[in-house]
Image 1 (cartoon, rainbow, N blue to C red):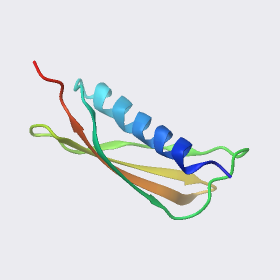
Image 2: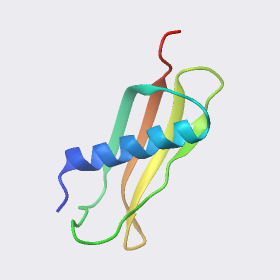
Image 3: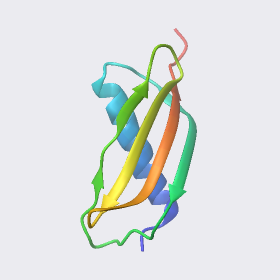
Length: 84
């Protein structure tokens, strides 16, 4: 099974990449993760992050981790922009 810290790293990275793809920059201010089922190490997984709200910082994002067509872990994050 994949360690929870590594799962958090993957989800945080997916949300950061999503933010960058929207031409926004931000660092993780808050990360909430819900582990629903164990994640197997030697099986493919799918990460899909989306920007939920981004009028001003913090930017709100969500990302599920899916394996075998089942949502195994979900994450919600808030990302702050760096100071000018």
